[in-house]
Amino acid sequence: MSIVADEENNFKKTDINRKNPVVKPETLESDKTFENTIRPKSFDAYIGQSALKETLKITIAAAQKRQQPLDHLLFYGPPGLGKTTLAGVIAAQMGVDIKITSAPALERPRDIIGILMSLKGGEILFIDEIHRLNKIAEEILYPAMEDFYLDMTTGKGQSVKTLRLPIPKFTLIGATTKAGALSGPLRDRFGIIHRLEFYTDDELAKVVSRTAGILNIEVDKEGAYAIASRSRGTPRIANRLVKRVADFALVKADGKITKDIAVDALDTLKIDKCGLDTTDRNLLMLIIEKYNGGPVGIETLAAALGEDVRTLEDVCEPYLLQAGLLQRTPRGRMVTAYALEHLGIANSGISVQTSLF
Image: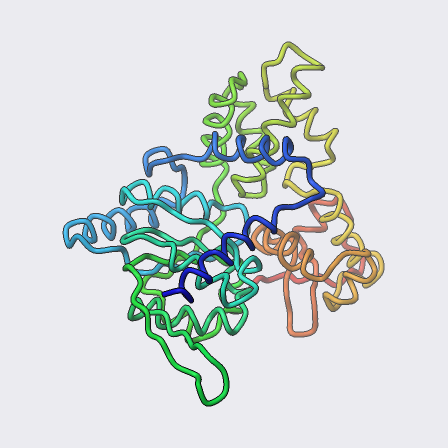
């Protein structure tokens, strides 16, 4: 049992030492307060993902009737769609605590061992970007997820002994932007797997109105819709834009967000009617002007733009593909006819993808 205590103490020390020494504490606290303030705590307050919510309500009700923890859940989809928030809602509905961490923070075996041993019966462990778990952490998770045991070894050489320590039954909720990057054995251990979809403008308008109300910002229906239409189908972006537009309204007008104020503010921020920012437009224009509409490889585009490949793949591409402005082909990326129309470019011999199928 001394080994167990050492592992738990090491975990706590590691967790403390990982605090960012560069970012000011007041900045971290401000961001954390904003996120915690606007995050819904129930399914009724959680906007969007209607089909997923109905499924989860049934699953939670069944687990409560059986008086058992939920099956392990995996949520995947583009960033900013509410995976972490949804995990918090599930914990609240189950009436249990939730521990939140991310895969990159679990660098060493004792990190994952420490957090698993600190769990209480029925608690939820949320691991963000779970596809980035290293192989050792995955191997430790396998028996913990299936049999609720931790397999550990002590000693060296011929004196090595294997210990199998029981841990309380818990629910693991994993979130990832790249479901395909998960190993097969890890993915198969999740009993419930769901994809989160981009939000509609109507849903985002409700998100904007709700966030504005929490922050005591006055916004009318048309102003909320104007922000929603440029939020790329993503609640996180909508919430961020509410604050930026509110600043603009406070300085340039009477503080109320109307359609005209929202449009002026977002134009000033260089966010266009489709929600594209400067990086998105530069990407599309590069393909059009330098590569005649494509196809062109993602590595070439990243080098030409001075951006990281992962930034283009994880931040820019998901929405551009969803909006029908960009298309992946076996030979590379191509712009679509809709992209030319949106950018106001005449199609004079430019190679475009005319069909999305």
